[in-house]
Amino acid sequence: MGKRKPGSGSSGAGPPRAGKNVSAGLLLFRRAGGGLEVFLAHPGGPFWKHKDLGAWTIPKGLVEPGEEPLAAACREFAEETGIQPSPPYLPLGSVRQKAGKLIHAWAWEGDADPAAAASNLVPTQTGASWGQFPEIDRCQWFTPAQARQKLNPAQAELVDRLQKQLGSRVS
Image 1 (tube, rainbow, N blue to C red):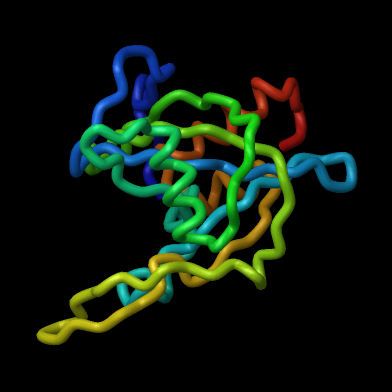
Image 2: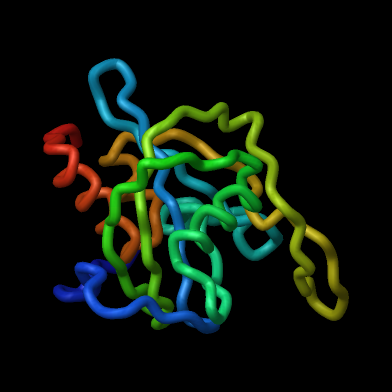
């Protein structure tokens, strides 16, 4: 897993942008047993099948032209998990992943059964042929420390920002 470069995230200042390199997502969290847990998604398809550390993500997707990033984040969360998010939403700012994708993120408090999560199907090329695979093959609750290991390195910053907003010192 690579290390984050200083300044790889942003506070979210500036106008929201849309396009193929701009996504928006939601980080679901709960306070369980006196500690914080976050709900992450594992990408589906053959490429991700055996990847774990650094492969998990917040449910997110592309912001369509003219679409508000928060609306895109809510739409994508519902499409990828089958769970309808509900306000209030805490702004977590933006992060830029190593490949250049900008992700606008918000957090929301709630609960969900990972076993009940159901993702949409997406066409994926496997060698010379195409198949349909779930965009997300599973979801799971993690402590902040576990989440930092599982998440794409740039997205790990979102967990830190959530903890800071909540005033949480839980690792």
